[in-house]
Length: 219
Image (cartoon, rainbow, N blue to C red; front, side, top):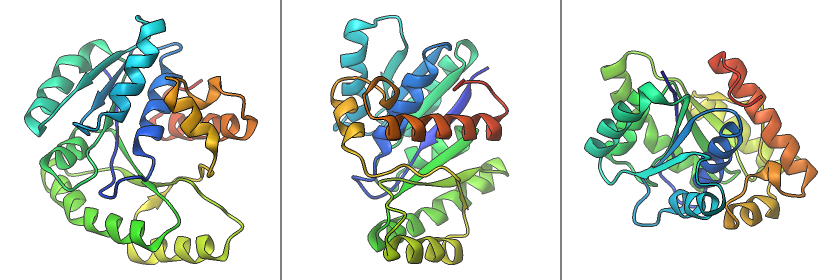
């Protein structure tokens, strides 16, 4: 039975697809992985997977879902046969977002150090509560992305997230690095690109997720 991880955020450009593709690609080294792109027609994760699968056709399964009904059916179909399903959700509040929250063992919410992204994330809180009303428990956590720890604004916004959003934050923070976009454009993960800092960040993220989910998917 698969672990299901969704990556959600109302605001576009927060690095959702970067996180989703890296998690799927890293785990696929040793496990059966399915990546579902719900962000259609943009389809960044699907485009990444198409490039990757051209040279590694057996490395993972990549599918798309254009509605919450398609998503629910697809997860139900794939869950018995895969170790990990990663859902790249649409950058807007939609039924697919709520469905992803309900279906997932863990939901990651990429958040950059900007007030606009915090406001957008605040809009997700009602959707998270609606998912809880159906499922009971929803584990949704902030993942700081494109993060510059040394800036005053980052420190201030981190405090604002603690006080305003009341969501758990992962300890791992993903930096603002060209390596992520370069790897994405080539159907690669950060571990396959020549940036040691990006590699270290992704290894730390995988290790933290293993601890949360009590798995060895990213080992």
